[in-house]
Image (tube, rainbow, N blue to C red; front, side):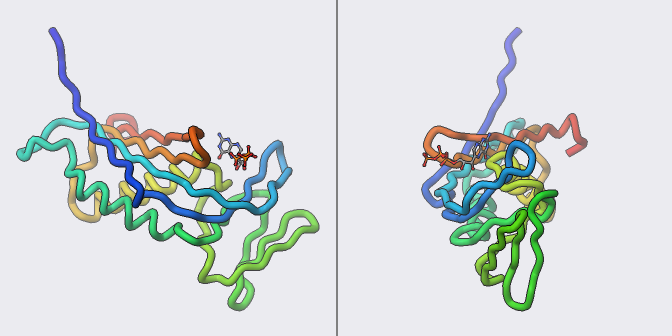
Length: 168
Ligand SMILES: Nc1nc2c(c(=O)[nH]1)N=C([C@H](O)[C@H](O)COP(=O)(O)OP(=O)(O)OP(=O)(O)O)CN2
């Protein structure tokens, strides 16, 4: 007995965002500010619908592109990092780590609800937003979803969601 499974995957040049960040590592060490051209790929698994689609490529691409655009040409800052304090001061976002301080125009920042702006946590954030966007459009959550983020050539992190494990 054999069974067949289907996956669709989108990754395109329009699913790339250029942004600045710094992460903490090894406890409270903190990188210097730098940037990447992050590339995003999204895969969903599931049965075929009446169109013989797992999920419409175009819908998946457009939903993902809208989320990626929110991060493009922005400074990405973590809201939940125990070692980096991030706060809004007037029209700026001010970050502090030990005796270091960075100040950015607020409109050039995205404060993300994550612990660290690693590729893994950015993938988490994008996947959570994508799931919410799918739900808000009344689309069924696919059997599984994987969101991958490439921080530098050949350095990918993937976050996985499974409808059976978390109830969708
Ligand atoms: N699993 C992960 N490992 C690392 C992550 C990550 O998000 N997930 N992130 C980093 C740092 O952000 C690091 O800055 C990665 O940048 P990269 O440019 O790849 O590192 P290099 O210092 O080697 O830069 P080059 O310009 O390519 O020399 C580390 N690990």
